[in-house]
Image (cartoon, rainbow, N blue to C red; front, side, top):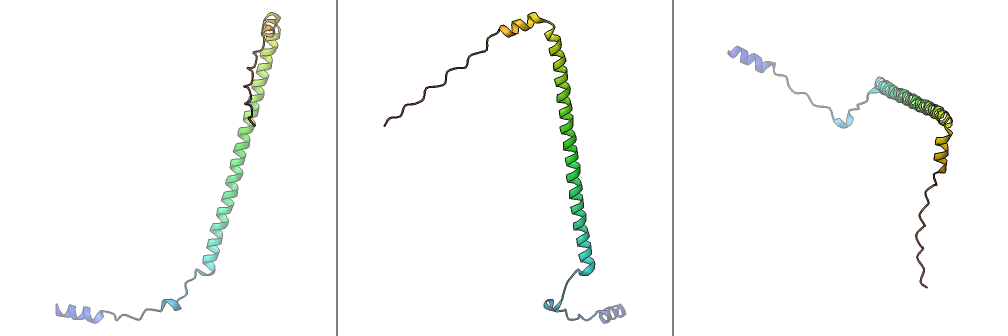
Length: 112
């Protein structure tokens, strides 16, 4: 047991002096710059691609809304044409008077 203890104590390294932090220079170097540039360029490319895709989806939604509005207008025109075939109903609708607007409120008078 004494042999192991003496061997363990003899094998203990002597601490070396630590370098001065003011004299140490930490830099990622060229490889770090290239890696950072690559990640940044990739992020920019992904952002532009996402904007393009979102714009495309928005345009498709607008076009489908316009097509639905046009088909609804075409369907209402067809129903209007069938309603014109019945002149008695149209005459009844035309004979209804428009509702009158209420009179505007009186303006307050100024006291000088």
